[in-house]
Each structure stands twice: as C-alpha cells, then as structure tokens.
Amino acid sequence: MPSGKRFHWLKWFWTLLVLAGAAGAGYFWWQHRRNEEAMSPYQTMPVTRGDLTQVVTATGQINPVINVQVGSQISGIIQKLLVDFNSTVTNGQLIAQIDPATYQANLQQGLAELANARAQLELAAVNARRSKELLDSRLIPQSDYDQVIATLHQAEAQVAMKSAAVQRAQTDLARCSIYSPIDGIVIDRKVDVGQTVAASLSAPTLFVIANDLRNMQIDANVAEADIGLVTVGLPVHFTVDAYPYETFRGEVIQVRNAPITVQNVVTYDTIIRVNNDQLKLKPGMTANVSIIIAERKDCLRVPNAAFRVKLPTESKSKDAAPPDPDKREPVSKRRRGLPRQDQPTTRTVYILAGQKPKAVKVKTGISDGAFTEVIEGLNEGDEVITFVKTSDKTASLTPSPLGGMRRF
Image (cartoon, rainbow, N blue to C red):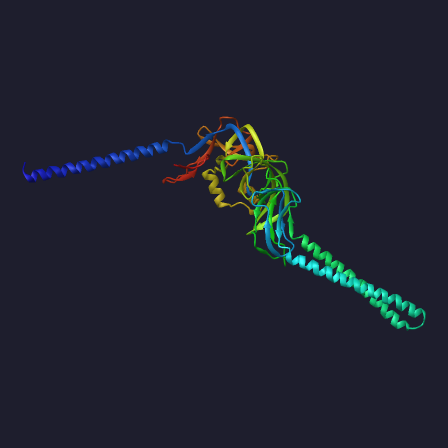
C-alpha cells in the first residue's frame, strides 16, 4: 500500500476511535444522570427496638478515701527511716527518727536553768521569812520588806518559766520520733536518710499514707451543663488507661457545691465510691467516667439524625426570618440534645407518605447521643427521613446517623 493511502487510512481510523470513545462517555454520563434523577432525594432509616443508656461523661482522678500526709514539726537531719514505699503500717508505729542530739542538749540546758531558778526561789523564800521576823521586831522598814517579797514572787515566776521551757524541750525531743497516725500503707516517701528537713515556715511532708487501698474514690469534674442530671446513688461505669478493655463500676456518693473554675470553664467535684478488692486501681490513675442517668430496655428508638432534617422550603424560610434569640433553647440543651429522663419532650420528624415527606410530632425520652427513645408518635418499622439530598450537582459529604461519613 502506498504511504499516502496508509496515512489517510490511519487518520480516519483514529478519528472514528475518538468519536466512539466520546459517544460511549456521553452515554454513560447520560445513564448516570438518569439513574440519579430516578433515585429518591430522601435517605431513610427504620424505627427499631433496642436498649438505650443516657450517660454523663467526665474525667477524674482515683484517690484513697483517707490519705494522710505525715510531716515533721521540727527541723533536723533524718537519722533513720523504718518504712519504705508500699510498707504496711499500724497506728502508733515508729516510722522515722530525726537526729535528737540538739534537742537533748536543749533539754539538759532547760533542766539546769530550772534547777538554778528553784535555788533562787529557795533563797528568796528564806530572805522573805527573815525579813518578816525583822519587820515584826521593827528592825527594818516596810519598804525593805516589800522589796524582799517582790524578789520572792520574781523567783516563783522564773521557776514557772523554766518549767515551761523544760516541757517544750521535752516535747521537741519527743517529736524527733515520727509515728504513723493511722493503719494503712505507705504510698509515697519524700525523704532519705541524711536529708535535712526544715520546719521553719511549714511542716515538711515525710510520708503519704493511705488508709485502705481496697476502698477508693474518684474525684470527677462534671461540667455545669450536666451537673443538674447527677444525683447521689447513680451507678457509674469507668475505665482507666492501664486496663482499657475492662470496665469498672462505682456509685455517686456526693455532689459538692463548690464550683471549680479553670479558664472560664465551671465544673463541680463529684465523688464516686469504688471497690478495689483486686487492688488493680492505683492512686493517681485517670478515670474516664460515665455516670448512668437513665436506662431503657427494648424501647422504640429513632436515629438522632432524623431530628436534624430540614426540608429545602423550611430552610429557606428560616434563612429569610432567623429565629428570635430570646425564644431559642438554652445553650446547654442545644449543645447536648439530651433531655432529662423525667421530662419527655415533643419533637418533629419526617416520614415518607407516598414518596412525599410528612411531618410527625413524636414524644421523646432519653438519648444516648446516637438514638433517642420514642414514647409515642411512631411505630416499629416506620421509615424516618434522616437526610435530604440538596439540588447541588456536586457530591457532598454528610454525617451518617450511625457514625462515619456517607457520600451522595
């Protein structure tokens, strides 16, 4: 075949190939648009039955119920340490000894000064007795006798002062021996042998003793938006990082009224009693707490996404007339979306009736964040609208009611 004809044939071949590819792409695009237009713009999910648990989450620190810091009221060098970390101690047990040499010397000096004061008192008493005899014989004037009596009283005061000084020295010497104030276990030791402790301004801490590690408590910080739901006696589930796949249980025993404000965030200390018979939980662990507010077994439930559905016409009307700020829900309720278990609320969802959305008023109860209890207004199996596809031609991402993202 001549080269000119071969080039002409190849030119037509590639032209037809490009046209065929374009026609195929156009067909597939048209078919996709046709299928897209045939699809319903509404995504639905059925009303089902299941268990619901409404919880308030918080974090806190695990601590012993009784935690005593053992300190020293005197200064000195640590001479002996008779216990260490994790040592079991009893009430009144000697646990440390401060070098008593200085305080023994102070006591000896005080005793000597007391003996001297008593000798001065004896001399003053003898002088007073003799001055009395001389005064009765009119051999000395009254002023000399008064001076002798004053000296006697001063000697008596000196004896009292020196006696108090001796008692103080004895007390300081006794404080060189550090005793355990409770039965328990040493969870922290802050000094070593030979270390000098100074008690000039405050008592230095030597040991931290926990009464019983089998009985622990969690100091949980509950946000002010949730504290109204928390009451004494509620059950608690919590986990710790040391055992991420194990759930521990406790009970709320106290909700303290003192607010804790950190960076304008207000929380309230909630005390949770914990049984630690297996001694797995250790002081200072961080607990991720779930306080169980209410539970429902085998109840009707609807996905929370159904309450967020807004029809296009409804959205436009809201854009044109924004709601009155004074009539909006409190910030805490809008943020949580979790009603109190004793206060059912009426809300609106949409179901499909003949491929058209229909608004239905339902009475709802508790929520676990993904599903909400339906008290009345819907039946099991009803299809509620959880997403409305907009007229936007581009694909969009929307939160799925069961978590994750779904593409349309």
